[in-house]
Amino acid sequence: MQANDVKQLLQEQLGGADVLVEGEGCDFRLTIVSGQFEGLSAVKRQQLVYGHLNHLIADGSIHAVTMTTLTPAEQQAAGQ
Image (cartoon, rainbow, N blue to C red; front, side):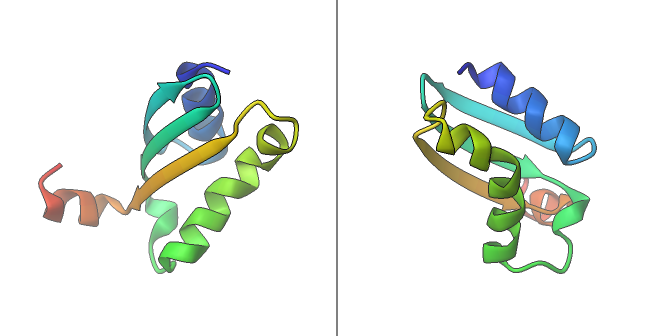
């Protein structure tokens, strides 16, 4: 599994989210900025993302995921 594959999948599934994927093989660090996260707790945000990755985790293509999830307003406030 390549970082670009994970990025493309998440951008398609999360409707134009800004996705940064770092890592290779089966260990990835994700930073995702999406308006879909508005009003969701950190846990609900992660559940939303994992919902799109679970099949890759189950088949062993992805082993470990670390993620940061932000709304566009949170990204702007953080100066990112």
